[in-house]
Length: 405
Length: 184
Image (cartoon, rainbow over all chains, first blue to last red; front, side, top):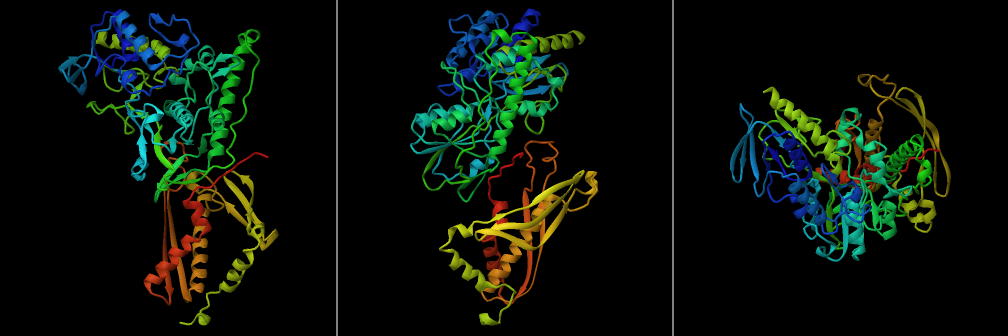
């Protein structure tokens, strides 16, 4: 049984079908549900169209360098479900999973199902992760998460504070600022990337240089790699870079990490410069890796010259405190990451941080597997095209488990 | 008790005069405190403090002081000095204590003894990189004063409150500050 009919669950279903393993895919809503219901209006994929590949399906449209809207992603995944003839049961919410002698007992909104093996493909982003400090925000301020934010028009007039500088945070800060609401972005640890490098999409480089293929068991600090914020990227027709310099040029005010809210005042860390330096250094090391790859593969001649980008500019004046009671700030958007929801999982495989205990997708309980989690087996694991290799290998392990029983 | 009979060893009149004089000289109020540090070996370092800038010119302490900092033997270090994070407690304790003396003098309260114990709680999983959710530094600092003075408990509590309100070290611990670290 596969829980979740997103791209990861459906890719796994495809490989199960190839091996003639009888299965069902349970889906709480419709295929690609989170892309239908849990995305803001302007969101497009971070990966360019030419990277939209699933086993047996790839983008064939006129704009390989463009980026799919959420609606186009729904269509793409739905088409894949049809082509793969995935046995999906929609509108079937899993409410409980327990261990039995034969495998697992799964309670759903449409009744119980027993299975010998289970693939958890319910995603890594089921709930917005909002820090406890949200409880200290004055009641006059409207609070949003990426799950209830749709577009800037929902926000009251006045200054917006966006907390978090991952892809979500930079995208929302930019569009809120452009809507005429002055915007402050609280910046913690972040991953800076240019949209284009030497004329090619930066994610093309990630792919061809092998960086994305790095396996989970060769990464020094896997916990850190799995917890990295998403890179500061946006998919737009202009293929524009959306780093902190770009946001500052738009007029977004950059402040340090939100440390605490005390007596109605938000306090921001004074460590902004170091976070800039760290992100700049990491980006330069990555670009060095790309250049090395281009040199050794003798592709240098076909690609534009190596380039380096301006360091992130420290703001001239960056407040360390903002009084949230003056009425200037009217809304806060929490772009502080997401968490999986395993509240239905009654097998002891969830660690104290709320993550599944697994080794490359082989969960710490016989016959249970995971797919579509960050750096599950490779750095590319959560990207659409990145799931194919993982799903093939996880399915192979699952087939071996069933054969041994 | 008349103010003239109180002597806590703080020249409050000089401080009040200075405040008056500095009203017309904003550049003189800009101070820069300095320290210079040199690595010895292992986790051991020596930090010297002598000169500073203030009242518009270079100033010098009567004596330059050296501070030895290291880590304890349970961290496989040689313990040639207290840990850097303990120096933070030194700074906080001495700043609050100086403040209490000055405020007491200004309020006409004779102090007989001012003692304090400080505790800073810290989870070392942060600095060891074991858990990114755990912060590196103190997550809680507690200061307990024992004060013997010619004043009621309420007056003493007010002294301690005012000393926190005007403490540079308390402020820099409890509130964020910009930090720039460069390689020259």
